[in-house]
Image 1: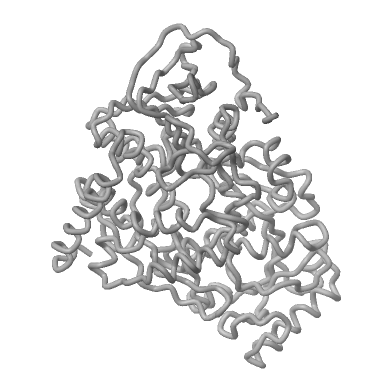
Image 2 (image 1 turned 90 degrees about the vertical axis):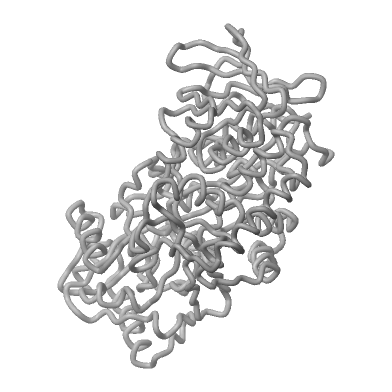
Length: 536
């Protein structure tokens, strides 16, 4: 018998609806996927209600991946789609539905073109394509997929308020502080949902004639679901940066017969500062403001376990070092660097959000220094005039730490990492006092193991048949990621949400596949026409 899940928000699933509201499409969750889904459904002619349990929409992420966006074509960026798709599938050891990868690659460019045209351009902004994807480690193939919203090609601009304005102008009925209680299924079809107005403290029913789209954002904020579906994450991670993602969409679908991914997938950042002596089992700090986040945590400086021993190549996708630390005592690790660190940041050539300068988040070395200094003040980064003193402050064996530093400095001289094979240009010396150190753990940004869907974004049942009237996108939708996130394809997670949200909105509104294809083709024609007149 299929397990039934209690309402994760502890609401009365048997409550009587005070009244009923009718619409064509109901979207649950106002994040990247939900905002796209609602806009697409409304654009396709469907009356649309978008509900969100919080008082605001979720973060609209910058750094959006695509294949063949207008911005990429204008910048001369070309990507071999099939090579990219196969690389993503191989990264996941093919524990994914490759048809979904193909669907994303085929539709991501048109989705970003729509976002640029309808949301960014009316406010004077545009997308800038990032052409650089240089990584010399042959084990991790990188692709120039990133597009960034900007006014001046020098810095990011947010666009959440603009997207909200678009919804309001186009008649999407957006209801904040309205929470999903359970889905309603009649005669084998999902026909709507019981919801609760948190302000008025009343339950009511939303009847959705065409479909319900789940875009609530995964389950990283739900410790009980993590224990059941991804227990190791509670040992790897000491922070959760998505506290509103409690799994409500996934569990509500499971309760009406849906199936989900059987293995976990997640994005973990290697930037979680941990007080010295704190254990992972004592921390699962939920933050919406990225508290105690160290930007240089992703940089390939020397990293040692709690025994003071180097344990892995630091020049790997940012989640991998956390994975490696999960095989070490205490699941945590220390990072060690010296007073010349700011001079080495640009030359190690990071990608995505860790990058030095635009399109990273830290524009210059002064910004990195300021970020590090604030954590020295709060005691989470320590510094010392000797390695012995540093080891004492970090509660590490001094002899082991000194040995690790000596080996690191010899690797600089040898121009070769004989221990773990880090690229020579990413080996940085530790010689200039004061020396710096900190204890780091993972910070889970989101979970990706979600409901199984097909290429129409329809949620599947145990027979792998679509559940009529039920769709999912964003982190509620599975089959696309497995295990660790591939940061060598910058912006993939946000683009997955945007693209599949848009496709879900079109499908739920009844836009036939041929009509959707025509919409995409029209966008492609616009790209061709505009390619000679770059706005970058």
